[in-house]
Image (tube, rainbow, N blue to C red; front, side, top):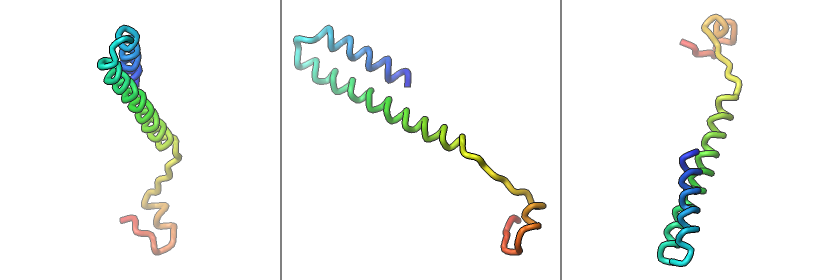
Length: 75
């Protein structure tokens, strides 16, 4: 995610330097917006992974399984 932020900042500086040439500005703006979207998507993916890792997990061993009803298929 840091790479996207750094690239976005680089594109913004290049846009500031080339403010009078529309043939250069349009591709730079596109690239800057692409980095913004990449940053957002990576952030969403990171939050999803963090949420999944934060979930409580319950495990059963065979001893617990044998104490349950006969429909349990642990083997």
